Structure formats: C-alpha cells, structure tokens
Image (cartoon, rainbow, N blue to C red; front, side):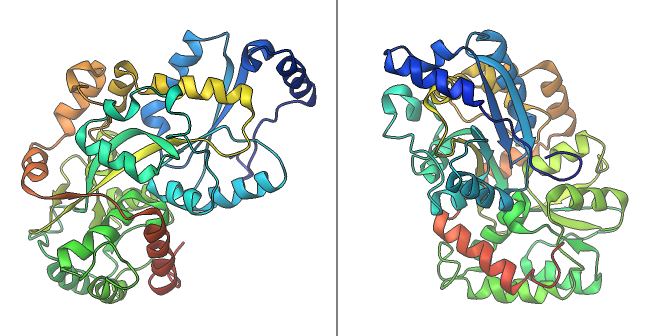
Length: 394
C-alpha cells in the first residue's frame, strides 16, 4: 500500500506471458525459460518482521529464479475482497500471502487459495513431519490450503501499567469490575484484525465456562453477555494492535489484552515501557496462534514452481531460527528442533532481556487449544463486529 493508501502491485507484462506460453508448448520448464521472476508478497499478519530476511536469503541464493521481491502490508479484513476482485478480473497481482488465522479462514471460506496438500504433496516431501507437536496441530487449521511458517502459544493475557494497576484482575469478573471503576482505561483492538483481540475473544469461552467454546453462535452465551457489559467501559476499538500498544505506552490507557509476542516485542522496541507487567486469568486456556504462507488462485505456473521452492526453503532450520526475531511472535519457529541458540545473537539478547521467565510455567501448567475453525472464526468476527464493535470501532 503506498502513501496515498492505494494498493499497488506489479503485473507480469504481456510480452513475458507470451514467452511463458510459447516455451511451455516446447516442453521446457516455464520458470527456467522465462528467466527470473518478480514475486509480489502481501503481509496481513506482521509476518515479514519474522520472515523477510529469509525471503531475501532465497533471492540471494537463487538469482536464476528470482529477480526481485516486492513486499506490501495490508489489513487482514480487506485482503479477501481485493483478491476476489482480482480473480474475477482474471488478474494475478499477488503471488504469496502471509497471514494469520483471520485472513486464512476468510480465504478458505471464499475459496481463494490454491490447495497445496495433498494435491502438491510430492512438491513438499515430508513437510507435515517437520512440524513440532503444537505447530503440527495448528497446521491442520490450514486444511491443506497453506503452510505454517511461524508459531506462538499466544494467550489471552492482560498487560498493564503496574504504577496504575496495583491489583491486576485474575478473573473476567475482576476485569469487568476494574474496567467499570476505571472507564476508558481499558481498550483492545477489533478481533478481525488483531491477534490479541481475537485470542481474547476465543479464550473467553474457556475461562467463562461456556457450553461450547468451539461454537460462537450457539455456545457462547456467557462470552457475548460479558463482552456487552465490558463494552460499556471501553472507549473504542482500534483497527489494529499497534494503535493499542501506542496508547498503552503513552499512558492514555492502563490495561489491554495481549499475547506473548505482543507483550515482548513492543517493550523491546521501546513502544511500551519495559517495566509493564502481564497477568493471566487463574483458569486460563492457551489459544495458540500461527502464521501461514498461502497462494491465491490464478498465480501463473512459472511463478508457482518458484513459490513452492521458496516455501520449502522457509521451513529449513536456518530460516526458522530467524523467526525468534525480537520476540514479536514468541517463540516463533514452527518446525522441530530449532532452539534459541540457533537464532541470531541479537534475538538471543532481546529475549534474555525482555522475555518473561514465568511464561515457561504458564505454558506448562495450563491447557492449550487450537483457534476456531475457518467457518466458526468468520462467524465469530461477524457477530463481534455486529453486536459489540459496531458503534465503537475505528
């Protein structure tokens, strides 16, 4: 997205397309005959912070395959409509999407992504066996339409200014009472475009004891009632998590919902003071999170061959070790056996300084669940937008 807020993506020229068709008829590999390609990557999850160095390493290693990579950031809720319009027009301006569970789910629902597994299993030999146990369960959420590239056992957690909050809430009821006593001091972002927001939304049914945490329409009576009460003391819902952390760091707000990465990274970057604290609900259940690589339908064959190779490359240990980053998606790696000692020294130093020792115990002591299915997540977002955030979202 450019400075004017407009989408801009490169297009394969007509001349290059004609060359690809011509060499294809001769039985020559299209990618090789056409020469190096430009790849257009769109990130709707903040994933490039973890993976861009890996993508650049691929370009450096395979200059015969990739001449250039363009990167664009976009809001997750806007992407499916953009891709759907392009596909209807017969265009292919986006080659690879980096997404969280939000746009992944929306794209599955709208049939936007290429099916990778089992359709292309031979291209990704043994890929499912590479994932660590937690990430392997998260990979199932992709339903074969994408490959997980980063992993985080997320939350929900509360983050607060200890100078203003001396007795942090340990239950939803305590959170509600605190919010009522301190109106406008708690905010969280719209779940459809916020990892912490959607983790809070999906974690509440477990904490509140709703009858079916997997069914937001018929099984979340307690959750929706709670969120409506909480709505009375929340001033507004920002469109993304970055705005929330900015207000928290500046002192406009005293508390928000968070996840491990959004706790560590803003403090490491100086956006939120290092001394701010986190609190888990007493009976919390971890709702895990992940980032995925997905390919929109309509990408030409000569680019698909390169993209498949790139996706395999991003799941190698060297590239996975880069996902420790500055704690943004803590811990980060999705495949087995990638330790912090394999990460760049800078990442090791950041996590030593800004990581939290209590996370190890919290992660071990509380159960973990996967996010909602694609259809259920879309339904939850729509109901939240309609019933909770309609009058207060920005």
